[in-house]
Amino acid sequence: MKYIERHPYVVLSICALVLFLAANSFLAITDSAESNYALTAKEMVLSGDWLSPQIYGHYWYDKPIFYYWELALSFSVFGFTEFAARLPSALMGTAGVLFTYWFTARVYGRSLAFSAAIILMTSVECWLLSKAVITDATLFLFMSACLAFFYLGYRENRRWYWAAYVMAALAVLTKGPIGLALPALAALIFLILRHDLKELLHVHLLSGMVLFFVITGLWYGFMYKVHGSDFLLNFFGVHNFLRATVPEHGSKNVWYFYIIIFFSGFAPWSFTWPWALWKYRKERRMPFAGSDSCALLLALYAAVTFIFFTLIATKYTTYTYPALFSLAILSAGMLQHWHLPVRKIALAGGALYTILAFTAAPPIMLHQSGKTIGQTLAQMDTSNTAICFYKGYSTSAVFYSGKTIYRAVPSGELEKLQPGKLDWNAKNVMPMAPIDSLMQNNPKLIIIDQNHDTALASRYYALYGQMPDHISLPGHTTIWSASHAKR
Image 1 (cartoon, rainbow, N blue to C red):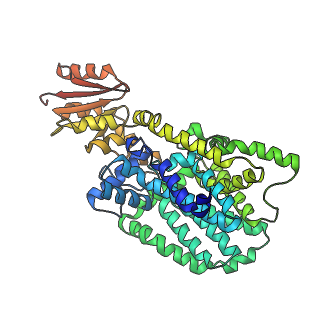
Image 2: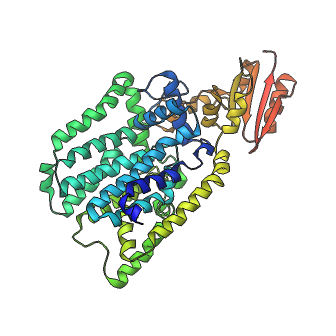
Image 3: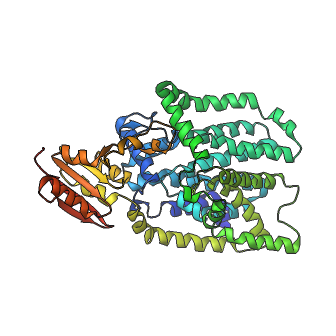
């Protein structure tokens, strides 16, 4: 206990790195989000172009540049491996835990800060996203720092406002406008409720925004200069405006979606909140005083995050993750106030996560990955051979194989699937071709069928009077390989 009190950063760093790095070398890159990031960063390294993201040899504008830089740097040092792909999120997740401790200790003291840090570290979503090949651990750090530095500027020294603008800029370079919008909205509502809008005269708004645009403009300005309207249409149009107005996954567009995410993503700590509210109703007191301005800002930030993403059309499980910064600190105050054994619960949770990382996670993630397909293709002689997926596609198979793989589509549907407009076809950036054209025009052809469709082989037999060779893989996947005289 004394060592923890004397060296909290060392203890938290070791615990977080163990949790977030455990078994990462055994966790396959999954489809489709992880593989998109991994393949884009891989192509960035191989092409030498570290400014314009590209995938399948084509420029694309799904996300800003910062996280791709993290991945590309890791790949450059450690190679194109699962460990390298997951390392940036593990490091940024650890940094997020340490920052949560630093800020909370500055405002509420070291005891509550340590509880907040381990609550964050052992929440399900923090554990998952700090091992995942996606932007969220990085975004969490920058958005949390933006909010925290705003509060320190408000309460302590207005020079902290400069740091808030820098963190907002880095958040926008990680995920887009949302990196500024949510902390700024929470801060504005905070000032309104505090009857202190005059503080806007002291937040260095003009010079701060100049600093913000200088940092973000270095990349956004370059992208517009080089790629013009194509960048504007796809990045701001498709991946920001369209996401907000048209659901990408209609089945998730329900009002209670993020309530489910709160209880599952912030578990086990989320399940203490109903109990805490019951205690409040019984005792008529909360652990944070009504005059506590930091608790007000944290509560507003969490509420703004959940309400905003509930209102927009496209919903993802990770969108509300930044709110865990607030939830961890507020939970620490509640649980410490009512003397719950936070450290024992965290220790049990951490042990469970580590066991799951080595046992359950590898087969689950392999099932969601095209790693086996990619490794099989990498061992095959595919010179002068067209390779395609039939009824499906796996970007991770491209990452692992290093091969060009087409998405085979039914004849007559290619035109309908082409990107170039303000719709979700913008995600169809992989090479595509009609299945009949691939069969007829390629003397050597490999077809990856993830549905074990025997009718496909019969179709080939009808064309050429011979059955293709095949390799059966786990998960109802068949690789058909055929060679014929071109007609």
